[in-house]
Amino acid sequence: MAKILIIDDDAAIRYTVGEICKFAGWEAIEAENGARGLELFTRHHPDLVLVDYHMPALDGLETVERLRELDSHTPIIVLTVDERQEICDAFLAAGASDFALKPIKAPDLIARLRVHLQYGQLRREQVSDLPKGMSAKTLESIAAFLRQQTEPLTIEEIQAGVELAYPTVHRYLMYLVQEGKVVICCDYGRVGRPKNKYIWQKD
Image (cartoon, rainbow, N blue to C red; front, side, top):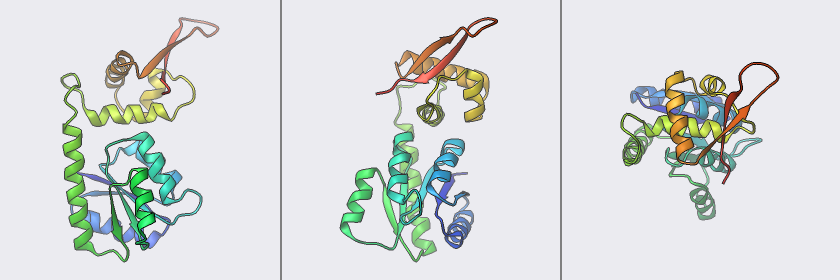
């Protein structure tokens, strides 16, 4: 079942879009603002994100920019009543995939979501250089979590953050280390054996 993350400060819109998603057979995850949306994106790794344009604190444009820092392939559709070309251009430059105009019409939204869900799946399948048995989506979820960290973490801490099994996290970390994306730091501490900690290699 595909996961759709809905980021909108209007509870009525979240409810309506959530019901449309459930009707189409998808799981709806709701966030009341951009900051909460980023948190749920990292935790649930949705297949598609719907983002409202006008939101307090973290608006839709900044939310899209932050989402793209975490993930490069998940489709992002912007919900808006504003059809101005400069707004569209700004969102596309930030990494948005498409737009859905309010008021929302269920048949149009479902068709649009289906197209982008299929496109997102194709993009994930195009990652062909991963070792056998490794998933591009799992790799991206671990990478997204690490990009948000400012201090090195142990495997156990990363495991708790991404909610995956220890052997899975270890395997993907070793791959990211080999690719030069993650750096191992040795923490000697005060007592006991030193612990390996991992941090994302800044560009």
